[in-house]
Structure formats: structure tokens, C-alpha cells
Image 1 (cartoon, rainbow, N blue to C red):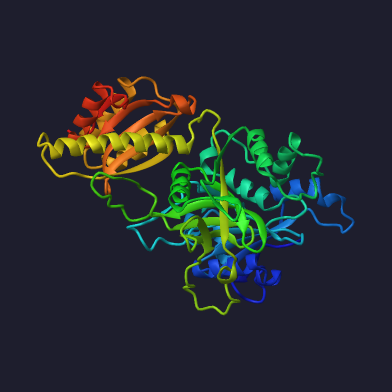
Image 2 (cartoon, rainbow, N blue to C red):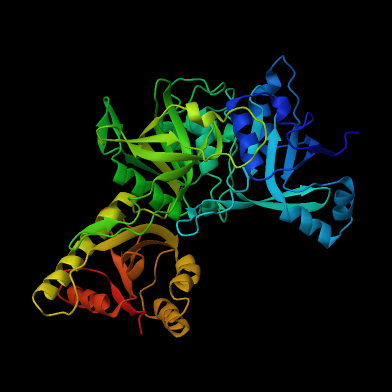
Length: 513
């Protein structure tokens, strides 16, 4: 009988070393080395749901006789001996706690030419708390080994399997693992996604082996999964293809990631061809400082995205940068300098071609009908009215202070998340105000939708006003339920403009006194 095996990371018995030197394997070895990996626990016989679906759809009929079992490798940042494993299996809370403390995640190794299956690894430790990573789509995964439960937070990635799914299939599969869908949606396998895509939009192509998916097929697959597709087209052109300006692309991706929705980005890998990746996080930017009288989107200064790319690996850092004429945006693989001193092959991201996005696709809940673009446009118009009226009153001597510029940030959020963690974070030092605002929103404001469009108007990093929008109607009917006022001056101005019919910000909720 095959036993659980313990290996030293980067040793001759390391299962990753045995897989060769593909870009994906080399990237994972560098990533794990920087996480401080020391020990690998290998389950030699593991039945993986995704691979079993792929096996039944394609590999079972091959004359090569592919096995239906995988290996699952767990990584730890400390030396783990069999005695530690035995103690944890015996119910020692201390031993289990030690395993969990040092647990880095897992990699499933499939017995096929593209061996890297479902992979979830811990994020790097945060070294820039002033501008932290935003990784809201990440979720908790549980693994069970010999009765021991281990948990890791991240988002699943896997290598492209040419038999069952191409890059777009893998990107969509990662996207549907998002934390946003945990409550109500089962996660389809890659074989399920390929079938979904061909159910109504096959255009005569065979299902397996998969030759890749079109935009229409991606949207059909999302709908078959019980979700609604949202497609953002590039707002400029690059070499005859749609492309994005930098501000729009950065803001759109950040809005989706803040909302818990990964962004599937379709575009052109230069000198290679069409490609698709899944954006799963971004690095927060410093608070913008808008000039007086101007409006600035909060996230136009975002420069780093974290991307699941089946050509490289999970959580790959990409730089957002404009082309030489600053007409359209490119993504450039920009992995940080390795922090480890192990002798490994050179990281693959240094020679990776630039990627030019042309479309952004995401999957949202079916009852969320407002688009990110429409919410952003509404936010800009409302903020312009506020800043223009404020500065006119200041310039005319009717209001004290100086002319100002405003920043706006947009996101979608579940009502209970806004009432819970978000208000608690903003009003952490104002417990009486927190209690009053929560009760007013629950008792005085008309019943709100499950998903809210949240527009935050602020000055630098200081929130002044939140406007909560109904997301259950058509874009053209986007209306505000209410506005939560953190600043008395801005709150009074919002009340006056609403009363005069110059703005429709809904019911006013006082959060400043």
C-alpha cells in the first residue's frame, strides 16, 4: 500500500523537481521558495473532482491508458517529521496547530502531459501595509489528510489541459471559484465549462479536444453556471484591435476585485496570439490628490495586478503600463526579485511577452444588473455636481474653507457586508454613530437590494459620503437608495442639492454626529 510521503523541498525527491523545467513548474518552485517552503507532504493516491471529470470526458478513451488517480502535494514552511504527522493524526491540538501555522497550500499533480492541476497557495506576506494588496475574490479551501483538516486562503489555479480546456476555460474556471459565489453556486469543472460553452454556441466545432472558446462561448458558459456575464469592451484601438486606456482598465479591474469578482481579461499576447488570464488581485495605490475643481477615480493610480496565467502560474504580478504613445494599456509580467537563495532555474516572467487587453469579462449574480461602467459614470456626474456647487459657494463667500477636488471609488457589495464589516471599519471609533447608522439604514430607508452599488466620495483618503445604489433595475434606471454622510459640510450640501432636484442621492443618513 502507498504511504503518505514526506520530502524535503527542492531535494531530489521533491515531486515538483521531478516534473521538469516548464515555465509553470519553475514559477511554482520560485513562489514556494519565497514562501519559505521546507517540507512536502505527498498523498500518492488522490481522487480529484476536476481531473475525474476531465478523465471521463476525454482521457478514459485514450489508448495510452492514463490513470484516474492524482497525487496531492502539501507544502509547509517548517520541518515536518512523521512523528509530527502521527501526533496530529492522533488528535493532538498542538500538533495540528503547528501544521496549520506553517501550511502554505497544495498542488495536485495529474498523470497527463500537463501535470499541474488544482493549485491553491498562500499569498506572500504583506510588506507594504500602507498600500496593501486587495484580494477580495480569495476564499478558504479545506484539505483533509488522515483526519487532519488544513486550511489555505487563495484562489484556485491550474495548468491548461489541451484535451479538455484552453486558456480561456482555465481563466473562467478560476473566476468561478471566487468567494462571491460560495453561498449559492457549485463550482463547475473544466469539462463542465467546455460543455456549457458548446451547448448553445458550438458553431459546429467538436467539444473535446477543446480548441479554445470565443467571447460568446464564455458568456454562454457563465449563463449555464447560473450567473450573469458582464463584458467591458476596450475604449480605444491598438493595431486594429480593441484596447483599453490605462485609467479605464485600472479602475474597471479594481472595481471588480473590490467587489469580490475576478476579472477574465481577453487580449493579445504579443508575437504569440490570443490569450486569456484571470485577474485575482491588485496592489492598492496611494490616495490621489485631485486638483481643486476636479474629480479623480480612486484607482487610476493602480500599477500592479495579480494574475492567474496558465502559461506561468498563480498570483503572478503584472505591471500596468501604457505603450510608448500612452494610447493603450499593456500588461507586463513583473515578478518581484526572489527573496530566497536556492539554486533554481531563472524565473520565467522575465522573458514573457507583453499582453494587450481588449475585453474584460466577469460573472456576477443574476440579480446584479447594474454595470460597472454605468455606476462609474453616475458616480462621476454626482461628484462633479457636488464639487462644483461646493467651490462656487466657497468662491462666493457663502461657505468657509478652500476650493477642493474629490476622489470617487466604486464597488458592488452585499447589503449585509456593507452594514457589517464596511461600516464597522469606517466608523470604528464612533460606536454611537455606528449603531445609529445601522438602525437607520435598517428601519428608515426603503428596503434595499441584496447587492448594492457603493459610490464613495472622499478627499484624499478621508471618506465624506457614501451613496448606495439599487442594482436590480436596468442601467438606465440606476437610482440611489440613500447617502451616508461622514462629513457635516458635505452632508448638508448633499441635502440641499437633493431638495433642489439637482441631485438624486436618496434618503440622507447622518454618520458624523
